[in-house]
Image (cartoon, rainbow, N blue to C red; front, side, top):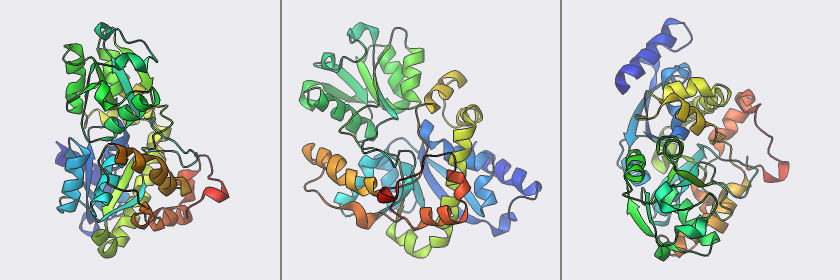
Length: 346
């Protein structure tokens, strides 16, 4: 299905005269997953935005950030869109990862967890906002992802730790079923699966959405050092196309929700549209990016034993591609709040 969508998108744009001839397109493979914040990838393919920028884009789908990082390192794709936790964990292991933009986030804030939520079943007895009531309960989530970081950050703010709950590894698409069948008492997950659990599990309770002050988990757009060295021109095209796709999603959420449904199975239009409303699709980086990773995200991962010591990720952040977009097509950021001069990173 994905290949057919790709061919249709390229053909449609080419016939309109707005795209390069297909033989002139540069190949790029994008690692993505069934998450609503990955919408710019799907929109960019279906609406021919990547093709308009001279790219033949192929989407490589994954179930988790860990698998996606491995795919990037093994050459299965040139770019990933994913969470911050696998990125930073990989850097701590000397993986040659490079951050070139944010999938979602807010360059003007020093905490970010908007895309994550905790939902409890009616049988759990947990009320909205009552994080302490999760103590002793079974919580389903995909382990090793941003959802785990969010959950543990929220638990920590309530005086709880991982030892106070039972974490059960459940793939994102199976979380709603697990909650509905009482295989777990609550779930922690990103969108659209959070919205799916709220709308499709009778009596479910949205315990908390975002709002983790200790959390800094914007989405990431990643590549590798070798790709930066060999294919900088392709990455520049990609970043320009991606920023344009993000703006289209921001301005056309209902249309984006319809496109998402062809890539993310088991989610209806109402739920998908609701899920999109919680995602801040802003690719820009600021000085908060490296600073908050070092002050919040990395220390948190150290506490979990995922990272041995703190480090400055600045060397694994490359702002040149966003700077190029800002210089050449600043209108794609015109609907976003400006970044104060003292927080600008490029």
